Amino acid sequence: MKLISIVIPAYNEEKNIPLLYQKITEIFDMLKNNYAYEIIFVNDGSLDSTINELEKLSQENESVKYIDFSRNFGKEIATSAGINHCSGDACILIDADLQHPIELIPQFIQKWEQGYEVIVGVRKKSKSDSWIKKIGSGLFYKIMDNIAEVKIVSGSTDFRLIDRKVIDEFNRFTETKRLTRGLIDWLGFKKDYIYFEANDRINGVASYSFRKLVSLAITSFTSLSLFPLKLAGYFGILITFLSSIIGFYILLGKYFFDWHFASTFSDAENLAIFIVFLVGIILMSIGLLALYIANIQREVINRPLYVIRNKKV
Ligand code: UDP
Ligand code: MG
Image (cartoon, rainbow, N blue to C red; front, top):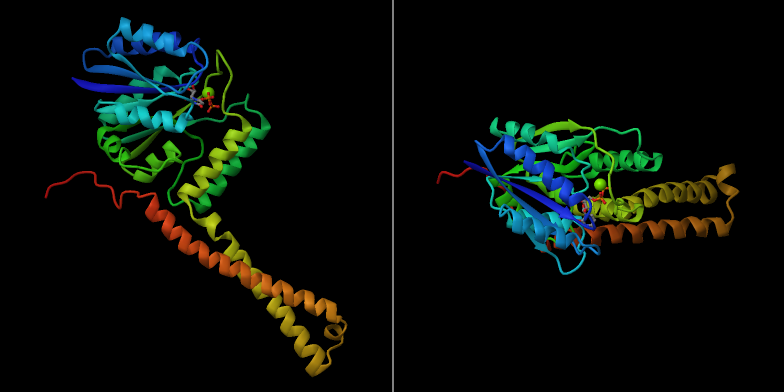
């Protein structure tokens, strides 16, 4: 009998947890001939009585386990802790707010049985999304697509199943600023997608404020891409290039060939162009420094050098 771990980060979800628990147990009741389950809740420093709900459930049902954080560490860390502590042959990550349709769990398991190692829930665009969220997420995936080291399908969520091999590899990550789904994508492995429509949140409010989402986007850009770091350098190359062309044009035109337009530039303007040229050089130097910092960052986050699926040595 295979064991499926369900990992659920929860921040102020006292009202959702009983509902969620009921839905999950109903699903596994149907699957009970083939699969055992454990539910690992991670209470991420909730301010309400989430922890009491968890305590109650865990006394009722020994398949319910929980990790109780000392304070709010954020969803990404909470999910990671759940993955670190799960003992299943596969683990499914689900939000506590019932936005991820629990009914799809059998489909995730089915794909897993077909041999896929990472099954990603992809959220179909929903009409109720605010325009700012639509534009924001569109922009995010556009940028990620261009600068990230790994391919990320637009709308991929944390709602996903990962195989034990992926879990073991995931547990080797040491970085603290992390985007869990980004790291899972980084690991590779055989992937498939399940498309779903997100339900509306039934109780409570989404705690991912706009500010948090922006900061998450920046974390993803900087942890999965070195492009932002190199930006100053690219900018410097551009400025130096343009200003030296203009500078040369004026130098030749004004002092050697008497070109009319070149001669109209005043000394102050020449000086301005010269200063811009120097700024370009400075930015390029910063870009160069950034390359060294990038190397340091790569070493410091101490990612595994490679990821192995199977071994026979
Ligand atoms: N969550 C968490 N810690 C936080 C914020 C959220 O563990 O600091 C959990 C939350 O309980 C839920 C999931 O992460 O299970 C998704 O959160 P939310 O619904 O606020 O985000 P959104 O649906 O907007 O992505
Ligand atoms: Mg939500």
